[in-house]
Image (cartoon, rainbow over all chains, first blue to last red; front, side):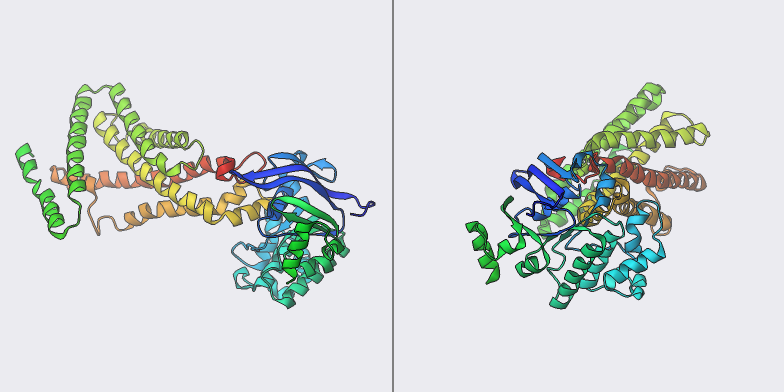
Length: 243
Length: 252
């Protein structure tokens, strides 16, 4: 990682287990502020769990997580979740229109979503304003993902966590979302962490990358490390994914 | 009715036993056990009620109500084992229902303050509340599971546990009260309610029997909605921790 970058999120010896199963084992590392970092690794590596920890949906069994150099446990939960937005692979929609979905973060605070913000966000994710009145259940997979990202963005999070948001999309939709994420990063200086299975995507979009395996952080650095990994396990993984 | 005539009514037990044997339904053992249990339990209740009615002592009435609530809690708690402290939540709910309904009935002089009224009405109210609790707990636990993603979505967007659980909770309250409301819509058309039929058979004025039945219907409506809502609002906070996280079974 570059030495002049500030840490948006830092992990110090973080452990997390579910029942008897260790999900995260002694994670120590950091995500640089205002940059795009990708997380790659096989299924079951603990990547989603790491995101859930950052958004405060779960807490580590031991170790510390710092957001902007402040312990995550010292944040008030609602404030933390608005600072660290998360968009999940399933892109769950609440019943109703796209507008209702976009307004959800405002409604939860007892506020109304300004019409201008709704229009700005829907345009930002590459959909036209007519989508605001569409029923969310009628959207395609790609459109749902875009609405899910827009819904997270209306909170204006400083950190955006994206969990395999393009894995079930066609190539065109994938490319649209990749461009969107880069645009968001450039426009709002949002720190972005992106879980992806697509190593090409990690190389082209991510400035930095984390490689996780079996609940451990096995390699981290600039994305170019994926071209020539030093760790033999990572080399095997990259080779397998590229074939 | 004499014991001899009651003995003759066992023909209605013999019919299913013969059918079960003939058709190999395998119901004989269960049917015999159910019959013996029903005879022992109801006769015991009959003698106990006779004693309590004769004694006209509030302590015995209180004791009977405690027994009714205890049995109802014991039965309903099995359906809510995944909810922390479910036993106490059921006790609080049933006691509240009992105090609310008897408070209104006795406070407004709708029914006399005698064992003959308090005990059967308490039995019907708590019995209904128990069934409602079981329906509610069944539905609520499955709603929490099936809507976990939606619940966590709302939490992840900065919602509170109350906001996150709102839809599963309301849906469970609605679903558990539907049978009570629906059965009340057709009452008297499809079947005559048990209590009313019993009173008419015992020689009561049918209009009086109807009026009492209406009283019970109104009571059961209150019981249904209050039980589900109260149990729901008592239960949901235990599903989350102080960090507003939805607790998984292994983290509870």
